[in-house]
Image (cartoon, rainbow, N blue to C red; front, side):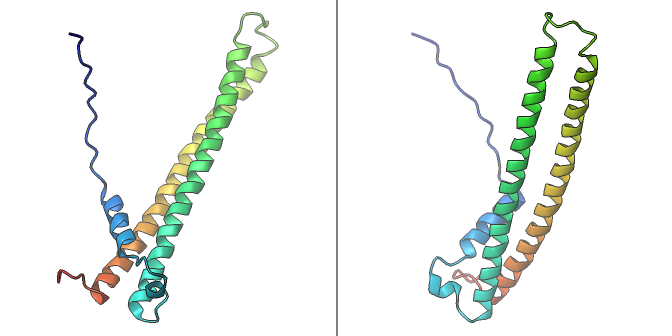
Length: 146
């Protein structure tokens, strides 16, 4: 009998913001007529939808920026590895190697800066979404009476 390999994956609990977004996505009506109604609740639902779309757009934008930085980083790392081969004399390439390492440091600094910007943007959008959901819940109570 061969030994079984058991893969243990930790259970990841959703964050508060992920739960908030799932509630917001559930609050948006599926019907086009309901979404474009003239009542206040429909207006809030449109704003919730717009905020969710902005959250998705912000995530996509920052993911593309991260991928671009990773692509640059891989290129620079490849260049550094190529220069480290013994067939090149070390002296003429020291300046080029230093510039490549400086550029890698710049990329890391840019990555941290973008992470802070993304966090701030997402936090602002999540706070706005929470405010909209609270207003929507007040105007349109759920069917179960809560």
